[in-house]
Length: 394
Image (cartoon, rainbow, N blue to C red; front, side, top):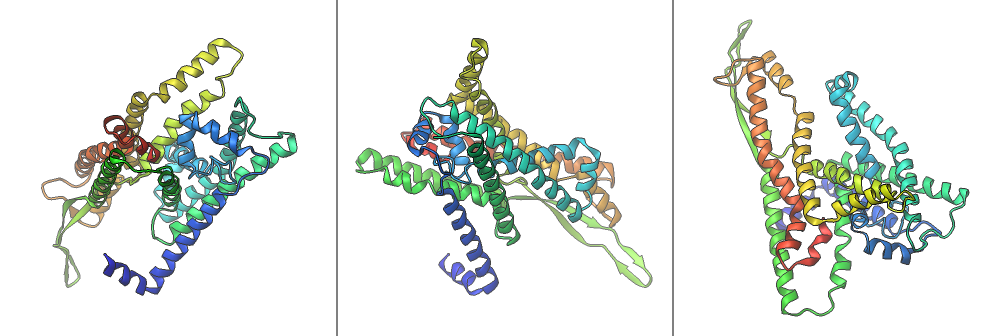
């Protein structure tokens, strides 16, 4: 591994890209530590400690929500916008046609996604401020119209700033920028976990050893599943063009087992956090029926078992959904037919498309179950092992 790292460092282009990504992540962590003026950070952290839903949102925002930083909302509005346009591409012909136009269509959809992120960030910022105002302890010292507008503008600008950083990282082809920002936010919480361990006794050492073993095993399985692929044999018929004989080649069509990466988990956590977040607005409603219903929703998602089951099902559903968005068997079958290719034993055209769809469905099932298992792994660790501090990675 050290030899590989030395080889990477000797390549100037790759080294510069890695250093650029590290610099952008450092900028993100610096922004996450800059609080918005006029916020009582002590009362805010006390509020988060007593609210599991907001604790999850804090992790999802990269820890910026805990001190109400300028990037407190993280990339959540951008992810929400991405989900919306992924859905629109399946039900509106115009967006579906854009998806089929290759790079141009992808750029147009990305442009629409960026535009929609701004109003979504304004709405989420407004909701966040109103929700924090319902806390028994005063979190925002002054909320006059000018200060309120300043806070909403700052939160929106912070989200757009992170969206820009994420796209800059993605352009370097080192990894998905949004995923790396979320990962950096989660990893940034490790030092505080380590500092909280003052004196290690035998039980704590055992807990840490179990947790490290589970983490290493999880990394190995994630790499194995990410690199896994199903090769579909493809043959090309011989063609005579002029005096040249072309074709007659046997190759394969690679289908990744995990086509969505971590995107289904990101989509699922956005959906899972939505109902309890909305319910938080009505917990202190003056109408008893509304307040009781809102409290019931918060309690339902606050239960580890029900939350875990719902989260598991959402990850499975989004894995199949994202696969249906990114992989079009009809297009693949049509392209194969135009190029004179065919799957041995399968007729070209619709039979090939049906065959590819069946293969994708079969490989999607283990991928969906694996991703869902990884998503709820922290809950399982908390429930079935003594590692009660493992929940910080949810």
